[in-house]
Length: 279
Image 1 (cartoon, rainbow, N blue to C red):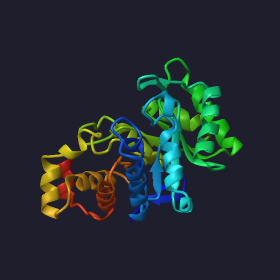
Image 2 (cartoon, rainbow, N blue to C red):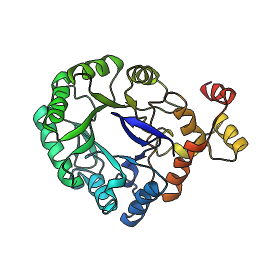
Image 3 (cartoon, rainbow, N blue to C red):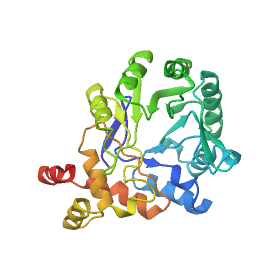
């Protein structure tokens, strides 16, 4: 499988987004574990999770614990990235908490659930309008300086905020995770900035989200038919061609779908095809 870099460390060019095996509509635990292991067997060495990937506040941390269980005995093969700053509420709602004191506790809890002494990549999940983002970014810097996290990242931020985070972190911002897909291209400026600064860009929902991934059509299906592959593979290959910092993290709840996604790293698209897909 192709390789990309986060903070100078080589990871697979396609990662696995853990959300689908932990939120509403999730598969049973055995299928979820088989999906995670299928990703690793296919050469995926980056798994992205978050403490908030759960049904609600009652099983907060579900995805982190699931990944730790699935990787037992083979954790040396994989780099796990997680996020803090989102909360869950009764009934399955989502909340935000970007206070440094909360992020410190959240990081400690993630360390415990993942069963590690240091988190490979820890990301501030989403801006909290009640907390100045400089304070939240400052918490990431402290976690880096303390050695609790190896690399720091942010998720769902604009170019100005990315520059501020990198400044507060002393040039150590390793990754940005924003939504990006054929139907959601407004993160192009963030992608371009990351390419300029050599910061990994991790598109979330790269196939358009759980409800839309199976409906990729138009040129993506046409190019896929020409190559004898799925439109999902074409979509991921198109993203990889955008810049060498791009590492899509498609979610999956079935072994077959993550195997298909991982195969995208072997698909070579022509310049004509890429131009057509860009349209």
